[in-house]
Length: 72
Image (cartoon, rainbow, N blue to C red):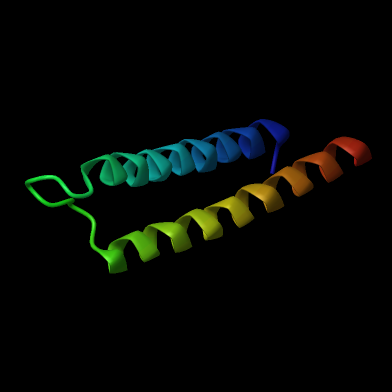
């Protein structure tokens, strides 16, 4: 995979992490208000798992990109 494709994939991971983080922050700002927050505890746990998985993929993509740059 070319460095440009790796960077584009990494940008996608980071953008997704930003959106997931915003969903959690927005949900927290609604806690205790009416109407009740949109995210359930189970959904929040799923979002946290998704963040962990995507962060791991982004980390691996960074390692691969740095390795490719060192070799190239």
